[in-house]
Length: 249
Length: 267
Image (cartoon, rainbow over all chains, first blue to last red; front, side):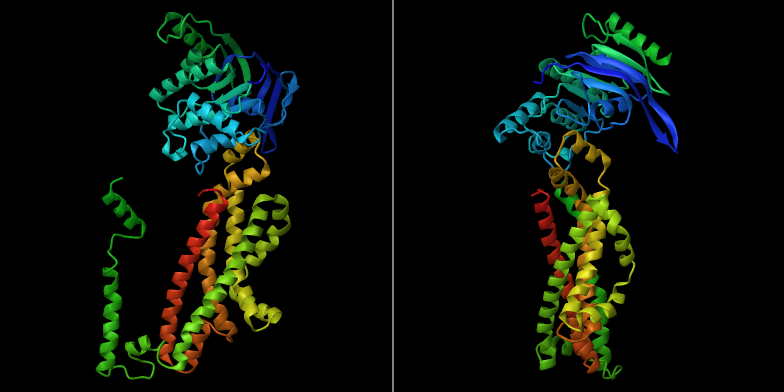
């Protein structure tokens, strides 16, 4: 496990240039995420929440402001951050094991340890027995579990989830939400998840960031302090209503 | 999928549910009309020959027996020329698809040269390489080279951004990215390029033999048969040409798909 590191996003502003006119995507976004937190980012389409994840993971380096991980400026992708996209993006020509092993390619580990780590990651997401399956042979939920295993096998300090359950049916969604909770509790990883689903955000997070679009800004940050994770409990429903109210604002 | 639906799907994929024995009816009927019209004397020109003469041609006289060596010469020439063309096409296509510097430096010339009809190369090639084997090999190699280079370059350039992002997020080395991500993703396009090359190189083989004319080969065999008014030789030559081409492209396709699968770690 990587040492606990704080993520600090400071005054991040980002625009895309469309037809020579700058189009602001993120405006003065600041957010600190402490080790072990589960932060959900909700907001309407176009509020820049996925862009923010791309900046954190290092796929895009063109922005103003700072993104610091443990005090160091993030530049380019690194082993300390893992990401799961909405489409699982497993390579269809590789088996489950090969897909996950590829994530350790840049790690100078003995082959035996790599194999053990891959087995552990597969077991953690509940896919033992499917090691030799190809992505096309997995269901949507299983493929998404595999994508999570591929991110976790690198043991990142921060796991970034970009609408990871967005393409799943509701039954699979609920199952995978519980799987995510188990993983988070077992690994003590920091998680930042982008989602459309307010109930999912309330169910999983320790903090919810509500963003507003055009340009993308943080509207409010709502701590989640629930007695229990019970979707029918009055405090759960009230919190959900509050987030929804902030979104509609 | 049950056995029955699978075989139905396979048949549909091969182009229709017509059993192939039914496809033989028309050729047999035509052959029958041919034999019959010669027997009753409708056709009596020296160009009208009996089918059995054609079947005997490869075994009968010296000129006819030449067909076996012609087939061997054509196949050998095809294999050498196609091999060279495919390898060079893969090399340049990969360089253009993987490096924008190479693409900028050579892409323009490549696309300009590609516009030249293949047959237009023959005068140039014979001027450079003479009227012999070298010109033919270069010509066959050229006809295989262009489709492979083009498809390899396009296939590699069109690998989806989503895959490239994964290889960046996983910090793959350039070598691993090419081997594990770009090459397998471009494999379908590369395979299509090679399949086109295999067919176009066979046309190139026969075309070179016709146009350059000397030496052995099925093309030469057929054009000599025509000069000597030996219709049996012409027709058996054409049949051999079709059959050899079919078999040669089938064998090469199998070999190339095996080689590509191995290269991209799919076996």
